[in-house]
Length: 104
Image 1 (cartoon, one colour):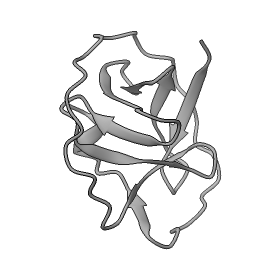
Image 2 (cartoon, rainbow, N blue to C red; image 1 turned 90 degrees about the vertical axis):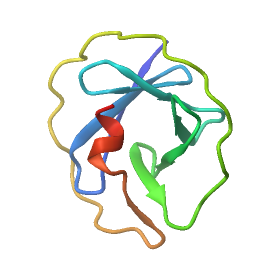
Image 3 (cartoon, rainbow, N blue to C red; image 1 turned 180 degrees about the vertical axis):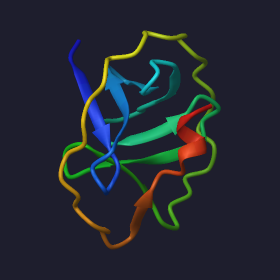
């Protein structure tokens, strides 16, 4: 399975996706993707959408409710240091995922 590195709106590396699982930069499983673009935390609460190919951003006002826990698959280890990419600025209707939600 390939690794998809994810960034915030300013271009900072914040997480990565392998298969349908979301990992923080330290490699801890923090969530999952029930489809290709929406991310939820381990408890089933909405985290964000993949926007513009590799930005993980939270859609303002979007609340699908809790879609159920998937449990953790543990850690896969860090994928190393990935520098920043260019900023895309603020996208209308979206905001960066809160850091504390990515560090659980």
